[in-house]
Amino acid sequence: MNDTANAEVPGYVRFGIAGLSGMGATCIVQPLDLLKTRMQLSGEGGNERVYKTSLHALRTIVRQEGVLGLYSGLTANLFRQATCTSCRIGIYQVMVDHMKQSSYQQNLLSEIKAGIIGGFLAAFIGTPSDVALVRMAADGRLPPSKRRNYKNIFDALRRIAAEEGGHGVFSGFIPATLRTMIANTAQLVSYSQAKKFLQSNGYMKDDIKCQLVSSLFSGFVYTIAVCPLDVARTRWPFQGSS
Image 1: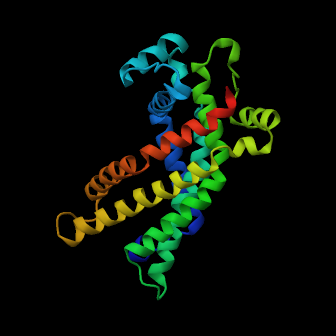
Image 2 (image 1 turned 60 degrees about the vertical axis):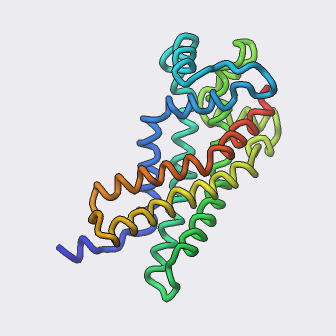
């Protein structure tokens, strides 16, 4: 029983779990993700801000595009989670596990290095789906005559590449890379450090409650750290779509 509980989880399983958990979360938070993208683009290019608040944005989108409009870009977001999220979390965890098993000393600096490396590689893999996600989520805000009406992520990537060249699907690679590196480091390292703090000081055991509190703290740090770069990442891929 103890051998089974302590058995090492294979690296490929960690990648799969990370991707599947990200995809599951996306199905729930996709409307909020779309609201975030639309509000970040509101006022872009010196135009008047369309949405005053999150509630105003929600009402406007539902009124103009219907409830399904809140799920624009879902396939791109799912594909992004399956590739980018699985890569950034999987690589980080594999590197941290390797440090634990080797003579390499695991500390805060080593965790930061793992987060940066995982974030960089994930950004390279995930930028095309990021571009497609922004374009698909933003399409509904354009006048009907200018909308692309992408069918799914593959249709979006094919048309972007055909209209703008291969570099079009990597539009915004620099801010996307910086964002993912910082996001990965802030999210995973803060989660790890929060768990260590709670357990080492005797506040909590390593259970679901400790994981929940650590996740809430991690999410707060993540949001504060990446918000400015998230706006830049969102607006940059949209430049070529007007």
